[in-house]
Figure 1 (cartoon, rainbow, N blue to C red):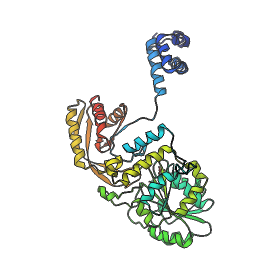
Figure 2: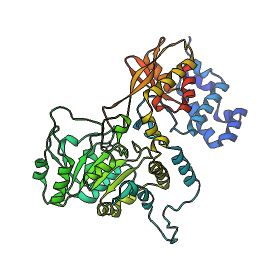
Figure 3: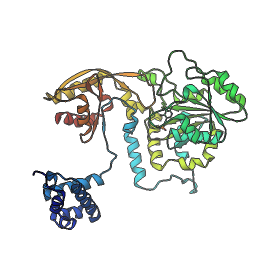
Figure 4: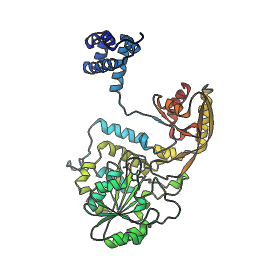
Length: 460
Ligand SMILES: *Cc1c(COP(=O)(O)O)cnc(C)c1O
């Protein structure tokens, strides 16, 4: 008879009261408060009660106490954790997109710590608008335009459509009705804004005449979505933005561009395929351009609406703008980020741009040095080989940036298991697999983080 009957196991479990009066749990109560300890103790005993194996019941009081401590420590620690991004994907939405510049972090801390003039005009002592903060800096990049900052690009799009096309139609090409990232589907956002979708053309071809033929009294706006994370290749035709702008002007309709990645600088400066910059998007004459703050701009999560002053004013006056507004921390980080551009120090100070600009040779030298410091790791074959980094996050979808990667071939487990082991490191290291090897790209790893990576590999 190897199995203990459940009733016998239950009898052997200590009571909550007995556990709580033991020194270890009394110490826990002093550290974390009695309520948390009580809850964790109940949960732990409940779990043991559900288990029938003799082994778990026999585990002894000190093991039960250790399990209670572990429970509490997990419960009180944040679930949002720092990770090391070894994927080489610069704007990785799952990993929180752009790391902030030191100046942005300092500004965040300063504004977070105390009070600020968020909505106060220090000249007059009267109430001011929070919008003026970022607007003042954006005006340097977009002269004669106005700017509005909201929660993210999806919110900006929602606000623009709600402002100009509530109960009306928004004309959009079928080639641009896309899903951007896991949860951003242009048609869904569009309908929730209160506008009706009016699709024109086909997936691969949409001509100016397609737009022109559906415009009527029901039309509220024309929308163009920048193909940021997809390309329609082959037999294609899309209407040049300039033609849409002319059509919009003729019919008195705003042309809104969902521009996506929001690069203020030309990507060709980084050896990437030419993509229009935010100012070029506006120079084409669109009424409103919408982009994210935390992609290639390299700032905090935000949605930037830039455009014709009267159009931006209309968005600002929409009561929905109040529901989508950003807090002081976002302005603090955004202003510090924009200031780096203004001082011509973007590539030096803004992590996304700095990583984008790293020459492959410099990454190779760091990878070789790291592998040399590491020496032999019994369970791994380690090589440094050419590879590709990616912009990610809806910018230049097919552009590969030459890099060098540390390629790991595990001897005692599958690449998936190795990937998982790295993910369980503290802090977690995120890598990717290609051709049965686990690849680590130092482009997205700050030199300060190399030691973490080194230790993680050594303990494998
Ligand atoms: C990334 C992206 C969005 C979504 O931006 P969020 O700031 O995450 O809301 C919308 N449109 C395009 C074209 C994008 O690339």
